[in-house]
Image (cartoon, rainbow, N blue to C red; front, side, top):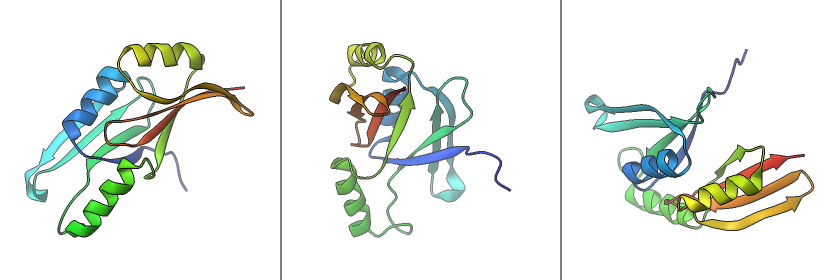
Length: 137
């Protein structure tokens, strides 16, 4: 039986840039940063919201043997368009969180907007991944 969701993965262009964005701008905490020489120096990099168990794995889009170069480039193109999935973060005050994150340099595509489910705002990370702040009703 499933017990809990522990990780979700997003592709990133540059793991160091992603780490800085998610920790310094969004305020997530570093959970894991391990390089595995036996797996061609694969870097397992995770961040998470303080006090929450779920972590986000920030994974560089791999080339061969995982993906051929054409597939790798296609994934990066889809990411740049913001179409490779995304993250949703809950907040008690979307407008205040928007102002705080905007002050830290987060670039928003949508200001806080009333929706049937609450108030939300949209931004993208440096790799193009979409994310939303959601203040539920």
